[in-house]
Length: 423
Ligand SMILES: C[S@@+](CC[C@H](N)C(=O)[O-])C[C@H]1O[C@@H](n2cnc3c(N)ncnc32)[C@H](O)[C@@H]1O
Image 1 (cartoon, helix red, strand yellow):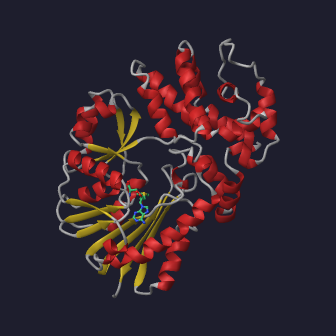
Image 2 (cartoon, protein in one colour):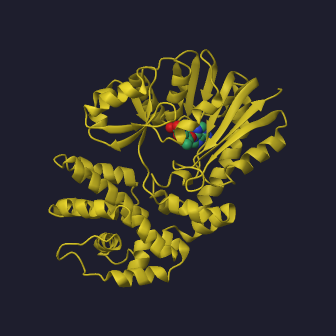
Image 3 (cartoon, helix red, strand yellow):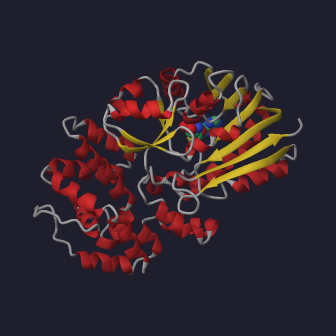
């Protein structure tokens, strides 16, 4: 079977659902117009997808849950398959009607019948499929050429499977905040807000099957859960933290992993969460308050002195470094189109610098975890190898390499656990 057909079959898995949805939603042209407007913003004004989608939803407070879900799903799908649709249609974004053509082509390729609207061009699905059959793998799977080539070079034969897996919409997962509740109590409470979840075998992780009113639920306002991918939930446990330890999360962002660490430490000890962006630390503080975490302090990294002053002060160091985000393309498909090859080279230099300088904060006998949400060995194993060659006082204890389509159905993550043997 050729890869264009294979891709179409991937998409067809949800065709019956789409058919149901489209019939409902196409009675309401406003939703489709909102989808068109959102993808125009993303591709014509380079707005981030999540911001554009959020803004679209804010304008439509009266939509029901199904319409909102249809809107979000279709915005993401049209962003994900942007290049594939351009190829199938043999048009690019200089044709001002492109968003409508994309919507129409996407539906036809997924076996959905469309109503007789004047906005639709009456496209022929066989022509769309024939155009895809002749296209390159990067066009068929909807990736920029440079990214495809780099991934093939770095990942070899695995890349084709990873590329397909990164096109499958990500499932939502929750991390149970065990400082406040347990999985079964959370599940029962969420049911009251029409949020249906499944308890996974992994500790304290729920898969969301139906959103319902998740973020309006009692459980959310009480801080009983955090939204966090099941792959991401595997990073904090690698630090092997104990209550009472001193831990630094030096690239903490809005604190997904800091909060998980606080939970694993039973809220006892000390966590210093740092970042170069104050607005992210402000968001972290808010989340920590809701989660009932009171052993965590935030600190802005202003210059190199902030780190130097903390030399050998921590039992555990987490470096969840800035990266290409190629492991989380299912969640952020627009990153494929924003990312440039030179960005990855700059990130690789920054990662090496962070690992070298920030590792100084680890005590002798302590542990350091270097983590990314990238699938590229150049940001992962190769960084760690280069660091170990320059720093023989560190030793590699274990590695985790979650690759969608290879060994994981979650997002792509890499982590290396190191220990500091001597000063
Ligand atoms: C992968 S994100 C962290 C995600 C976060 N740990 C979580 O679990 O939610 C990387 C973070 O590194 C921060 N960052 C970028 N350059 C940095 C630097 N030189 N030092 C520390 N943090 C940096 C970014 O602002 C970003 O928040």
